[in-house]
Amino acid sequence: MTTYTPNLAVTKEAAEDLSNDRYRFVVVDSDGKVRRPDNATEQPFGIIQNAPVTGQGASILPIGCGGSSLVVLGATLDEGVQVAMEYTSATDAGKAKAAASSAYQVGPLLQGGAEDELGEVLLASMTVKA
Image (cartoon, rainbow, N blue to C red; front, side, top):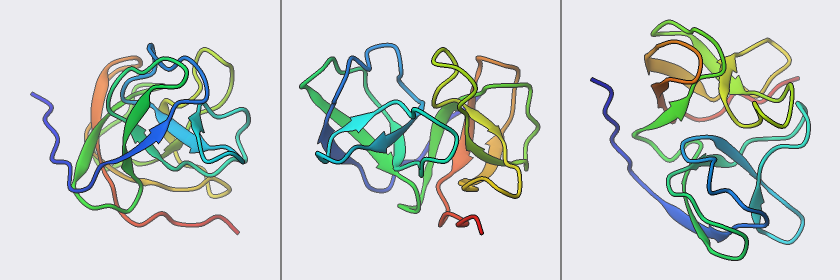
């Protein structure tokens, strides 16, 4: 059974409807609000823990805060795999994928699984891409 141990949560306003994005990565926009990623080069801020609509408070576990979080998997991934934020389409935005060397590596999976299942990721300090 997948569990998680949050260490620090922050609240930021949702820039868009995130009611279907619980346990996905989000990014911070230029207004300080959180939203789904628009492309693969954006830096993930954290993983959303609730399901807010536009203008509501989004509870987020930031990358590097310590502890772990549940995360929606974008592919079948094994425990121990380093993950990054997915962006191949609007449907898959914010899911966890295996990290390529050019991606922002978030941390290792503590619990893997199949695509669209919940895994658990260690919220380690992010490895910044070159």
